[in-house]
Amino acid sequence: MSGTDKSHATGDSIVPEKAQEVLPKEVEQSVPDSVHDTDSSVSHATGESMVPEAIQKAAPESLEKALPESIHPTEK
Image (cartoon, rainbow, N blue to C red):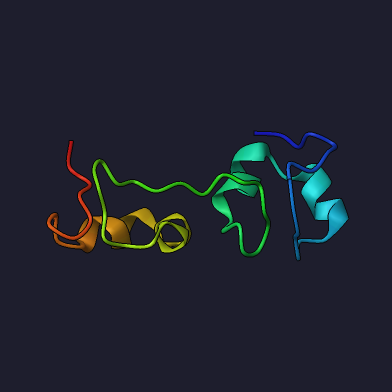
């Protein structure tokens, strides 16, 4: 992976601009959107969830998968 000379942020970021320019897109997207907004946070739900969508997008996949299927389905 090499830098791209541009930021992939689509919103607010606390990551210094120079760092954004040299970090690979994959690294930028792996940072939570609350720190560096690339609009890449997604829910891993495979059906209707009782968890609010904003929390689904902010939560790590491992937390989503730890919830009971009856509350937040993640199995296919």
